[in-house]
Image (cartoon, rainbow, N blue to C red):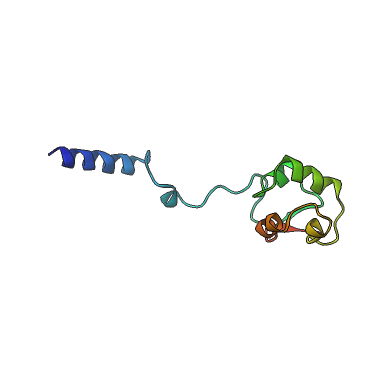
Length: 96
């Protein structure tokens, strides 16, 4: 009887939404100010750049100081970002 009570309690918590696994909640929220379109590294704000995976305060400052860019791979060529960090964001950025 105790086992049934625990299972029923767990199931009711799951149904009420308080213990729904993240996989059932859907995709994570979009990056603030980023609506699915790639982010232009020549015009992006510091907050938008920091929202990219692997980009913190130091890389944000380096990206902004290195502007303007003609190609996004200049981030690696000019040693602004390490290759691994660039590989993680290259499909999320553009240069216009």
